Length: 189
Image (cartoon, rainbow, N blue to C red; front, side):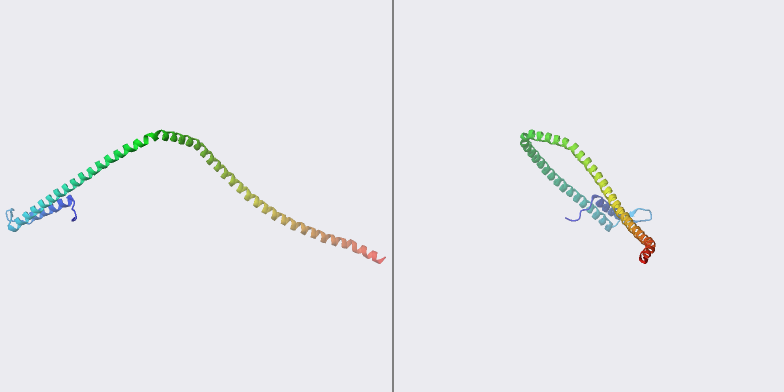
C-alpha cells in the first residue's frame, strides 16, 4: 500500500495546484489573463488529478467503512459469545453461591477478630523495641561505668601500693633511726 496522505495534506496539494494554475496566466495591459493551450492542458490535468484524488478518497472511505462494519460484526459476535458464556457460568455458580456466602461471612468474622490482634501485636512490638533500646542503652552505660570503676580501682591500687611502699620506707627509716642506736647499745654491753 503506498504511503497514505491525510485529507489535510491532499487538500493542501489541491490548493497549491489550483494556485499554480491561476498564477500561470499572463496578465495583459487591461488586467485580464490570457490562456494558451498549454495552460488549458495544465488546468485539465489539475482537474483530472483532483478528481482522481477524490475518487481515491471515496474508495478509501468505502474500504474503511467495510473494515469497520466487518469489525463491528466480529465484536457483536464476540459479545453474544460472552453473554452465552456468562449465562453458563451463572448456571454453574448458583449452587455454590450459598457456600461462598457462608465462607465470606466466616472470613469477615476472622478479619474482624484479627484486626485488634494485629494492632495489639504492633503495639507490643513497639513496646518491645523501646524496652530493647532502653536495655541496650543501660547495658552500654553499665559497661562504661564498669570500665571507669576498673580504671579507678587500678589507680587506687597503685596509689595504695605506693602509699604502703612509702609508709614502709618511712617506717624502716624511723625504725633504723631508733633501733640503730639501741642496737649499738646492745652490742656494746
